[in-house]
Every structure is written in C-alpha cells, then in structure tokens.
Image 1 (cartoon, rainbow, N blue to C red):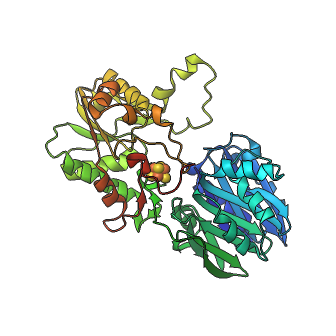
Image 2 (spheres, helix red, strand yellow):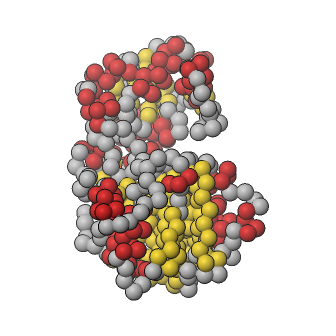
Image 3 (cartoon, protein in one colour):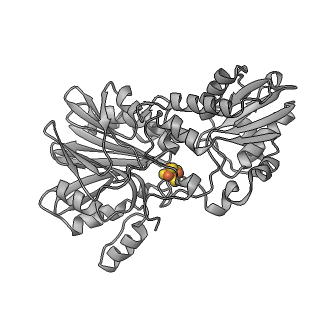
Length: 448
Ligand code: SF4
C-alpha cells in the first residue's frame, strides 16, 4: 500500500507536498519521493526511509517548482530498494513525465513479459513501471489521451498521479478500489489518497475522483475525462477497517466514526456478554472499543502502554532482542488487568499469531478471561490490490473454524463482526459499493 499527494500552481509546492506526504506516512514507511515542475522541467528526488529522513531542510532551497507530486511506499510488489522508490521518471516522445502509483496491477507480470519481448528494458521490479512502457510505446497527441488509452490495458487497483511540464493529472481505476480525492487551496488544486492530508495543508476537500475518471489540472483549470467501460464500484473496505487515518473521510464520514459504529454494532450482536472492562488493541482497536463501551454500558479501559517509537527503526538483529518486541510494542498495564474479564477488540485477525501473543501477555499480567472481538469478518482470501495480506494458506480463517481459532489464540471466547454490519458502518447506511473480496473471495477484477 502507498500514499500519493500532488499540488498544482503554488510557489510552495514542494514544501506543501512534504507536509502532505508526512500526513500520509501511515500508508508507507519504506521509501518516499517527490517530483517538481520547475519552469517546465521535471526534477525528482527519491530515497529510502520516512519522509523526514528522505528530505532535508537544505534540499528545499534548490528543490522548488510550481507543481509537485509525491509518494510514500510500502511494497507489495517489487522489492524494497531505492530503485523501486517513486515517483518514477521517464523521458519519452511525449516529453518528461513523473508518475506516482498507489495500488496493485494484477496483469503487470503478463504485460511486462509482453513488453520485454518487444524490446522494453525495465529499470525497476515494481508493477507501476508497465504504464511507463505502455505510454512510451502507444502514444497519442496529448499526454491525457495517452494515459486514458493505456489505462484501459491495466487490470487491478490503481490511483495514479502524473506530472509533466505544465500539467498535473490524476486517475482512478474503473472499480475505484484505491482512493483519490480532489482538494483546493486558494488557486491551487490538490490530489491526495486521503482527505486528512488536504486538510492538514490548509485546503478544502472538493470531491472524490470517480472510478474510471481522469482529472487534468493545467493553468489553474480542471478538465475531467472518463476512460474505460463503466464497472461496478468496489472501494476497498479495509481502508476504514484498518488502513486509513481516523480523521480521513470515506463514504461521507470520518473513519473514526465508522470504527466507533462498528464497535456499537458488535455490542448489539453481543448483548448478553458479561465482562468487567472493554479495551482495544491500539491504534485502530481503540475506536471500536469506545463504540462498544458506549453501546454496552461497560467501562472502557486502556490495558496496554503502546511504545510509539518501535516502528521500522526498531532493529531486530538477533533472537535476544526479537524476544522483547511484542512486549515492547504493547506493554500490559497490570493493575487495570488483574482479575478482570476483558473484552478486547482488534480490527482484524490475519494469521492469529499477534492475537495469541497479546492474549498470552494479558493473561500473564493477571487477566481472568479474554473475550476476543474482531471488528471485521474472518479473512479467508488474499488481497491482490495492494493490501499486504499473506497467501491464503497463511490466513488462519482460511484453514480453521472460529472455535479452532479461539483455541489457537487461547481466548475464552471469540466473536467476529458480520459482513452486512461492516458494510452498514463503513457505508454510512447508504453506500454499499465496496470490495469485500478478502472476506468473500468475490474479486471485482481478474486477479491474474
Ligand atoms: Fe481491500 Fe480486501 Fe478488496 Fe484487498 S481484497 S481491496 S483488502 S477489501
């Protein structure tokens, strides 16, 4: 999964882009990069690490332009190295272009082989590079027409940003699997994976880019264009479940409220449950737990101290240090836990190994019983669209029944949210157009 952010027609484009990318940091921590349009010439800079590690104060003195696009990366295809950091840059018949991609192209391998047979030389191992070769090979008179024609050859999930001299262009896949939002800041336009980044830079959200829509921003004007055959909209429901920032808006309401509602619906499903306290696995589980506590009348308590500094910077060079990792990330608060029956809510259960460790730690700290509650249905299928779920055989719910999973994680009870309630909460009681393939196996596109 990745985050993309672009801003047009602003003398502080690169600095505002930095702030936007910083806000989207939760969407990818492996690499970051930015491309700017500097008086009709595209310059770019990419590096490994967090946004604050890649960009320095000094570099902004020379790295300026009127428009900028940027990217934060978490790799799901292609290895984690600087070669695969985005934006990618190419110079073709159409001139200089930089691109930033969020999502996963399911037919990238087939297209790559076909293009290589025809002589294309790939520089990276990312799926995103295929669009560069397609655009270089099959071009039309304008870059926007070239983009529209070639996006039709892609399958899977994508939101793209393109930057060429004088133009910033955004595009969203025909199913709308990955998000892309348009914002405005004075005379500048913004394109962002999430609304939170538009608001943090002081902008206003205009609207979502529609599935199968291209927006061209040129000389301060917007031009919209549809491409491809209309398809059934299938927005990734996992954005609300886990991925997106709580202050971002999806389907007309903040993610925080969707998660809070999921908690309330869980409490309704579990009306007769008896417990002393309700708590959540940080961070996303907290909003679920607050909703559950409100609906059930049970007290909410924080049962873990979360260490905020154990991200990718926490090195795990040997077994001795690795042994401390789980406890170091989430340390149980003993006095709150001792002798209590705890309803513990997490957003999802993937392999089961993390829940098992958490429950073991809570019981060791004196918890009487753990009622494990999951804010989404059992994950039985892998994601091919850019969320990093493991292969099907590593997904615990693809192999075991709920009672067997309960035993494996050593919970005293285990309850999952049902799919209609998940859709109800995430769709604000109106929107039902979600991809739910990891729960149902019904994929909205070809997966190969
Ligand atoms: Fe999102 Fe699951 Fe669909 Fe992947 S399969 S896009 S994680 S809902």
